[in-house]
Length: 145
Image (cartoon, rainbow, N blue to C red):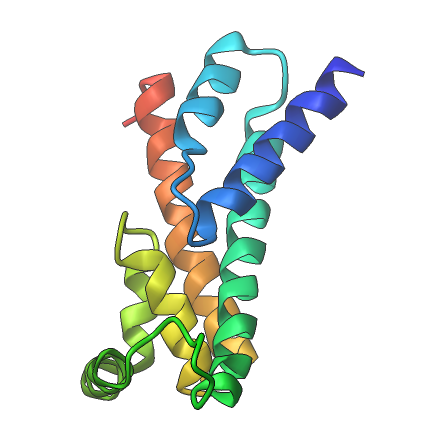
C-alpha cells in the first residue's frame, strides 16, 4: 500500500507541476529515489508519465482556448495571444523540447494547442524533454553522472 501511495503521490505531483500551477515534483522524486524503496525505473516512468499527461492537458486547453476569446472574462489579452503565436511560428514545434524548463515550459504546451500542433508531435517532443529531465535528475541524485 505504501508503494501505491508513493506512486500516486509522485504521479499527481508531476501532473500538477506540468499544469499552470506552481507545483514541484522534483523534490518528491529525489526523496523517493533516496529512500530506495521503489525501483528507479518505475519512479522515472511514473514521474515522466504524470508530467507528460499534465502537459497534454495544457495542449488540450490550448486547442479550445480561442473559442472563448470574445468573452469578457477571457483571461488572455489579444496582444499576448498574438505574441505567443508569433513566437511559436518563429521557433516552431522544436520549442517543445524546452517544455521541461521552469516558468516557460508549461505555457509552451498551451501555445502548442492554440497553434493546433499535432497531438503526436506534442507527445513525442514533450515526452523526450521531460523524460530526459527526470533521467538527468535521477542520475545526479544517485551519483551516476
